[in-house]
Picture 1 (cartoon, rainbow, N blue to C red):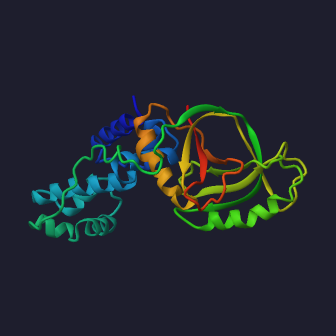
Picture 2: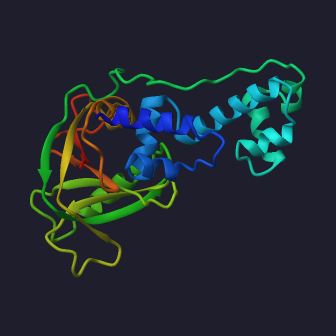
Picture 3: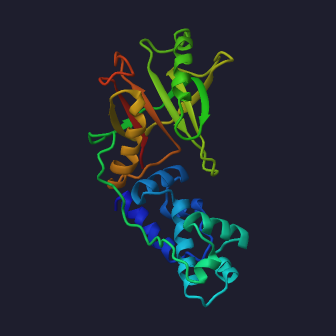
Length: 280
């Protein structure tokens, strides 16, 4: 069973429970993924985040019920697990541009039905099949920030860190640079990005550096070709094309990038580096 099959099975499960409270972490548990991986895979397969999908389907079914004119707005709102009438009305107006009462009186609305797979074949970013390989454990010394969505903060962090990395006396020679992305499963959508260089151990680190130990794991290794400004396309390609079509399930709350010695200018079309996604 591919990852897309699993996501669509969760969609079917949701469709039978639209009158229930359906928090995204519960959907992730149903699929057997971490929250972070589930949200990205769901978006890739269905074309929208799971929270948006659940809300739009609830509102569409509620609107269809209201259009029949047999039930009150309050009754319909509570039957689709909205906590109060104000929240329901606000979400309804945002979705349809009109009020629940107007639809009950016959106003038209744009119904959203069950979504199938969206655009799994789109050739975004990554154009070569990934390679499955074991990754040995490693340790990083570097700097870390928390980011939300697309940001230029990571590039700025690298620009500041590289001169500092040259002075880390325990770093491997030649230095092996990596970027580690990690996250928690508490619902926070932020991702911790660490720019780092491999070191043999984390004892006696200077006070301005953080250290991370990364366990060994099996990884799907994707090759990114082109400037780092196109990295977003590569991650969308991984989560919207390759992983949905694969039966390898993403695992562990991190992924990392590794950079080849002598790869050249990171803003050049000839630049190459690897994105490693742990899989079960």
